[in-house]
Image (tube, rainbow, N blue to C red; front, side, top):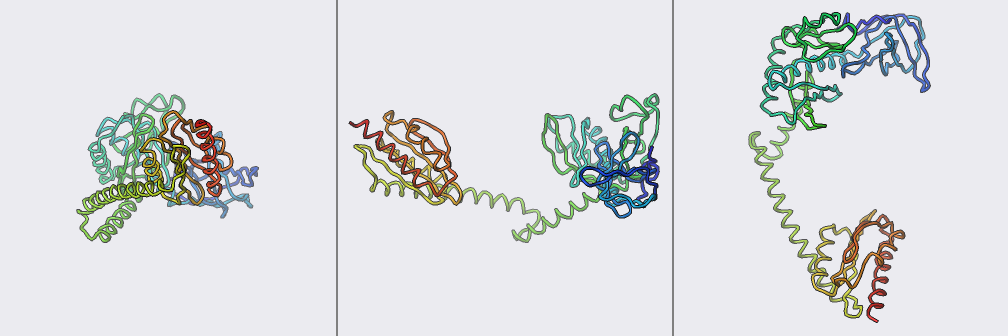
Length: 404
């Protein structure tokens, strides 16, 4: 059994230990077991520690049959090694974990919201609760409760108990069924069975702030900034706000209204641009009709554009076939792909699929539709002219045959 210094001395990050076992792994790393360690192996959503053993990077830590296994980049060269835990990372996750306990209890008190899972990431902490939605007012109330506990700097106590003694504590959640329990208490506020490493007092957490929420798997996932992460996030938000006020030449209180005005103006400009582009496409179509090919009494227009966009392509084709007796073959060639659209206003005189699909392979084309309209994309723009020409040829032959 490895002596777990991270429980007995959670504020200690440097230690000496004897090497019990060291073995190579297939990927070139090593497994190292010590007689004692400050490296926390992870649990309860809290990740394992990182650091060094005699300068060799500790890449992972896990508990296995009572032993703490350190996965290192190099094998230890001595029987006794000096370990150094990444203190900043550990302190951060200790604050995250204890802060989560405090905020989970605050969610219960503010809105009777039960925490069902947690995740401690490198960027934020997430708490999932049983709910279809969470009112912003409940989140703000939970923040007030949690931060009041932090300001009071309540003590964080650990209780090692037998399972039979669990009734002594008003636990927030049901504990495991077997073995001894480790109860983490935030003084007279929250009690939870937890194997994580925690801060000694709530004041070390500094601040808790809920920043967003999302629905997932019938639950609500709340993203929370805790500790120095919340302070750094606040700094980023201040820098962003100041940048926006300078760029928009307005006060902070006016930023949202100014952005909304700009978005409304942009939408109006986009509508006007679409109207202009539709009119331009119609003019292009009218001009193309003057040089159209006649196949009996049918007017056939074939046109290839360069990066005109799907709306323009559609407007061009719709203008061509707005009168009966017309066929439009149009495509938009990009740098690496192309879009194509074939349509007609001949009623049931022409089924397009037979004239179009057999040319797909040569141009890397694909698409769908049948009857009077087909459209799709292609991956070989250099073969586009041949693709369109082949379709025109097949359509011409089909119409000529029908006219005989």
